[in-house]
Image: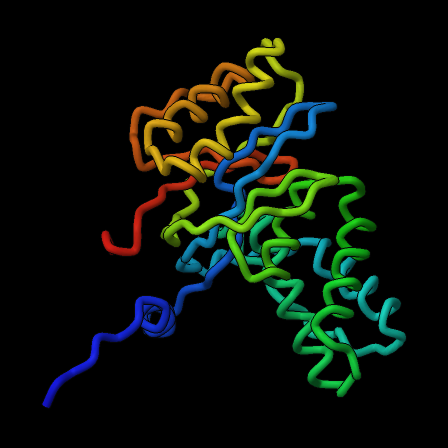
Length: 244
């Protein structure tokens, strides 16, 4: 009997189920600069939660906003916050889960487009004018990996999913140590260049820029990466699915 090869997407889904992991959106490239509208590269990442649960107010704030938006007290389940996942990525993931559970539980006649309209409005209320949150939510809505720049149409990109592990997070002081036009241009072009070339050398270049601009430690381990995480900068370890 001839056996057919299992498609890669199905293999990834089966692996994720067996490993009890989550798939989240992460801002793999993109450094925030005050007053600068540079692109963000959002990728799909597989992460295995460590069940490091903490109490956080953002869940309660979201529940209140969501119930007000739909006009029903449907979102009431107290979801726990897993601190082992980058904050911004987990916010996008868990709030969509809450919305879908609530819509299903109460039988609310809301389609996918309307659901995401509500989520975008709540995002804006909780994180005003934050284009990182907009980028991640847009990628989730499109179910795609994207290059996102505020005010422009997102561009879908085809890149392999990665596996990540959160190592640490630090408060982000958005007061650059040094900044000029050449650095601004380089920060903006790197997400685009990586999406086109997939050159791992560019990962080290952006890590170096994080160090130069925000005085973060320079990373000598090639599988480590600084990523923007709202008011934090988070250090992740990444690998390809083929390596796990």
